[in-house]
Image 1 (cartoon, rainbow, N blue to C red):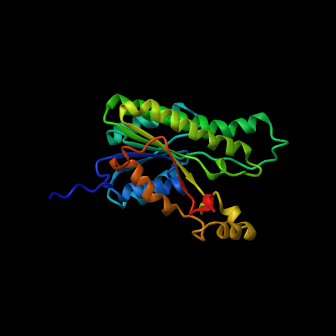
Image 2: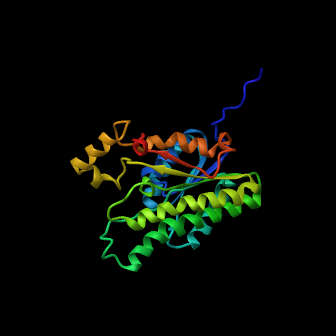
Image 3: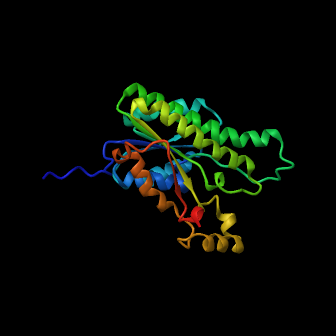
Length: 257
């Protein structure tokens, strides 16, 4: 009996991670590089890109950092072109970049509300569009992954725009999964829970909120960026070839308790 190749060996594959220079995005990138993938980080801050690329290069794969701003769609096509020029192809894309701020929903203006939707919905969709065009043209399939939030399941005080934007990603994923299946492109969504990142530091500094999250979570802790390394490898690998149109929750059991 012959041994099968390692299902999760990403050697020779190329992955893009938007917002991959810190937080959950850097967690994705670490997992991908550990598994042998070449990685392209698309993010706004070039200094952070360079630091992340230097760290990831220690795993022995090719890593590049490219400036990219979801508010400027032309930077997406440029980043895609430069990634293919440098690394040869794109096999997987983790559309992780996004964000949102808190505000009084009874006072927020239309421009501020729209910015949140533009960043998280439009930015994510056009990232997927750009990479999917490349995958379709070169053939051979591919993997597209979005990153939403448990705010699409639970109420998010002072963040209705962010919650609405993240909820929209599920519809985008399911629609694209159907449309792109004929090209052997799988599309899925990841739904993080309460995770220790720079963005959640103010929440963790609130003793009451921090302990409430721990008490509510069956795993009895906040998640870390390392908790996203394995799922990134799975979704970038051929092991997930029949897994599409799904949302996978990474929250230590918070949403089921």
